[in-house]
Image (tube, rainbow, N blue to C red):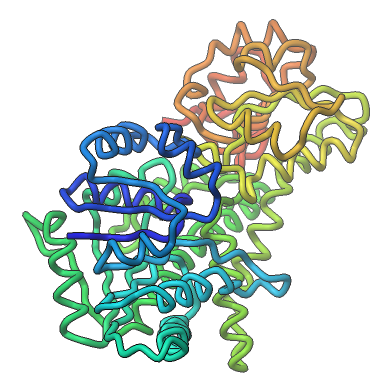
Length: 449
């Protein structure tokens, strides 16, 4: 099939590369000429396991191309994906200007049937606006061109996006015509060989499904984080609680790991956007609003534990392990590390930080500053530090030599923001240990099995 992808960000690039990998001919278009030039040279602007290889393979094979020429891109693909950004407005609602601009562009250039598919995360009702924009652009030319509009939300986890695309749990397709449904069934047939995972529904339900999925997962995280706050105050161990409730198949173990809050480009933005959409319709989403409040509060817990231990943090040096919002990405959008570092700087502390992939992104966000030292590895980060804070649970941080780490530090204090360490083991190495929902007393006394 011949496919066009508007937008070469995270979603657009992964979608284009994976569809090319399954044998389609894909053109990715973007207005950023420098980015397109870099992609054409094989330079991948994001870190995502497996993505670089399939981009290189499909560019070499001729199945994947990059361009800034919108007319060429519209002429190429029967299927036109819109995968541009929908950044939040000041009120939290999704900004659709880029989506609608692409719709206008497609309408201005198409001269035969096109299926226009929203891949971006968009509010319910966006397909109607896209359809209206297409019709307006076609009419302005005095043309008579048939088109369909569909919704095909993505469910990609950063750090596992290629695998998620190639082996999907489900493929959600929102359509209002049989022709659109058949095109999308054919497109995703290679990913449904063993079991048909395609779920076809109306367009508005598909648009809501994306938000609903992210908000259910975000709610589980915030609920577990709130329980961790209770555990801290009643001297209980939330990790033991987690194992017990996760054994209930109605709950399960996914997304019930307490930590220092969620970040990234999806959960925070989608929570706000759906709450805003509902508010505009006169309905207050009390649970959804609470999810955001709990998460914002949870991002401060690492700083609060340091402050409770030291009192005055002025002049202290804090080592930070992990800057990306999650492992296997360099994405720092709304990352808990940002909240922590900014609070530490406000309190007069210095940060020594290391992340396997997000160092350049940290430099881009914060630039050069005297109170931030970006280190070459985790061991260098702890040199002379008064405390170590684990923020992102990269595998490289899983089994450090705590005795060696303690010997490098000025004071052996560890704040485990993801509960990945055994408190008893860390305490035996001489550390004062603080976890999430694991009081100092219970954490030091009880081994975690």
